[in-house]
Amino acid sequence: LVDLRVGNRLDLDTVIDVYVDSTLGERRPVDDRRRMGAMLANANLVVSAWDGDEMVGIARSISDFAFATYLSDLAVRRAYQGQGIGRRLIDRTQREGGAAKIVLLAAPASVGYYPHVGLERHDSAWLLPPGRRLETDG
Ligand SMILES: CC(C)(COP(=O)(O)OP(=O)(O)OC[C@H]1O[C@@H](n2cnc3c(N)ncnc32)[C@H](O)[C@@H]1OP(=O)(O)O)[C@@H](O)C(=O)NCCC(=O)NCCS
Image 1 (cartoon, rainbow, N blue to C red):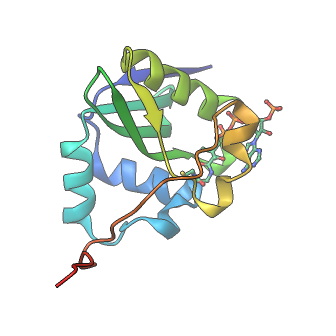
Image 2: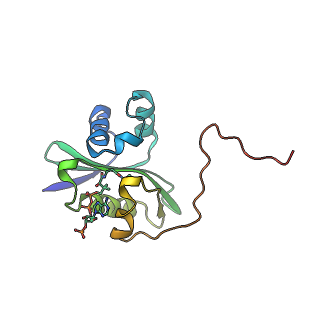
C-alpha cells in the first residue's frame, strides 16, 4: 500500500535515485547535485509516494496556490509504474494547489500518458531556454 506525503524535506540522494530509476533522470541534471538540490529546496509543492520507508514516486511543482501550478517533474520508480501512483501524485498536486491550474510539459516518454489520465492539450506553450537571447528589433 503506497501512501503520499507533502513537503520537500526529503533526502536528496533518494530523490535523485527516484529520478534515475524512473528514467526521467535522462532528462534532468541528475549528475549536478547542487542543481538538483536547488530544484528540491526551491520547489514549494512536492508530493512524494512511499511504500513503507521506500520513496517510490515524486511530483515536484512550483505553485502560487491561487492561479498556476507548474508541475516540472513527475517520476515513479520503474517497478511501481502502471499502478496508479502517477495519477495519485497529479491528483494530490491539484488538490494542494487549490484553485490553481496545473501546467506541464510532457517528456517524450510520457506524451501519451497525460491525455490518457485526462489532461488537456495546449498548442501554444512557449519556452525560452537559459542563455537564449530575445529577438530585438534593433
Ligand atoms: C509517466 C509516469 C510518471 C506515470 O506514472 P505511473 O504511476 O506509471 O502511471 P499510472 O499508473 O498513474 O498510469 C495511469 C494510466 O496511464 C497509463 N500509462 C502509464 N504510462 C503511460 C505512458 N507512458 N503512455 C501512455 N499511457 C501510460 C497506464 O497504463 C494507466 O492506464 P489505465 O489506468 O488505463 O490502466 C511514470 O511512468 C514515469 O515515471 N515515467 C518515466 C518518467 C517520465 O517520463 N515522467 C514524466 C515527466 S514529464
